[in-house]
Image (spheres, one colour):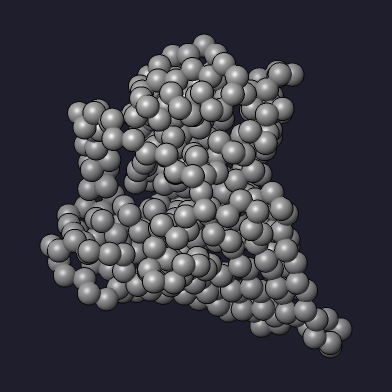
Amino acid sequence: MTPLIEQESPMRLGVIGLGLIAQAVHLQNLQTLREKYQVTHVCDLSATLAAQVAAEYGGPVRHSTDAAEVLADPEVDAVLILTPGTHAYLARRALEAGKHVLAEKPFAHTTAECLELDALAAAKGLVLQVAYMKMYDPIMARARAELAGLGALRLVRVTVLHPDDDPQFAHQRHLRYGDVDPAAVDTSYERAKAAEAVGDLGEPYVSIYTNVLQGSVVHELSVLRALFGEQPLTIAHAQAAGLKPGVKLEEPPQLQALGTLGDAQLSLSWNWLPDFPDYGEEIAVFGSAGRLYLSMPGPYLRDARAELVVESVQGGERATTRLVSDHRTGFVHELLAFHASVTEGAPVLSTATGAAYDTAALQQIARSLA
């Protein structure tokens, strides 16, 4: 790609959605990257929150409660979309307004939205990047390179141990105010696309799809894609205890899925463990000649690093390699990558077309559960 913006001064960024992920992660990282980013406009349905974030961020930062004001702002080159739910609807409006887009996950409920928006970005000559931060962790490239030494791949095992939300961000400041106009919250598009994605499955499958699969498991699909590329992925069986057709679950499930990824067997286990505070995530790859273990940190720990252990046989001798990742998390590296794509024409790693691959796999899991 050729550079899309010739830029010596920082890229002017609008931030839409100022909830937990904005406060705990993105705004802090943007402060660190002030030489590359200038936040010029922040937006949230809470006027009090938008005004406070703008005042505390420093510098001339406009604030509003309507995303349309950000998209119409001539002082905004690109937008970071951090609103609740999926982000395809706002991403479309931003691209149509001529803004580059970095959108948090989940990106879209349907594969059609993903593909259509990638095509729209290409037609407009704009960058569209999905914020799968784990794909940008520097350890991913090393883990991917190590796969060649494992021999024929037999099994890929993904395990997530998910605590309750509050302990994960208890160390972070989280501003919330009760001044949002309920009439400003329109979830009709979100509900329609979720129904389109899972058809007539109904509850509890719709909620599992929107909250658990799109809210968390989607990260595991992006990690698999970062490691293996878009290998053929098939889900043969999925199960979760306590599912009753027509009844929404009171809390997230223990979810197990079995299938194939390329020539390897795939085992995916996502577990809600609310009474233990630590998040756990491991991707284990077992080959005929070696083993790889990749441990990813919790999302709200700014300095926590991913760890990689590789066990192999070299020259008839067993060898073990242990590595830890960069102190800068994947969240920082995805911002650096977005800046490089916009200003230098660097290719986008986490495309919306890639998100379509992840979305299709999540739909397979939902249908298999039902």
